[in-house]
Image (cartoon, rainbow, N blue to C red):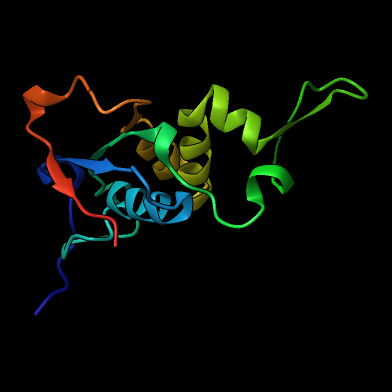
Length: 143
């Protein structure tokens, strides 16, 4: 008996929608990363991109616990000397809440070609409306 190995050509991708309203950022990101990576599937193979597509709605209503809004920062660097920029998560959540979810999910994906391909299948929307109705996404509940 041989071990089953999934192939990229035979994978059928489904669409899932996650409602982030009143859910913690980490739990939403873990669920999205698991689906994007394909680890929820029985035919998961580590060296094959088995992941599926994820739509996250209500990104502006996601919750950060404790004092993270004031103590957690998003850092970026311009590449020049003294070019470090720091933005508090309170400001980031007020201006670009989609970016906060994308950064959290990206950090949970593998840092290789498969992770780079997986993050392109993540769509995050600020409000409750999304443009992927034609794909008939399956709603997933955050536990």
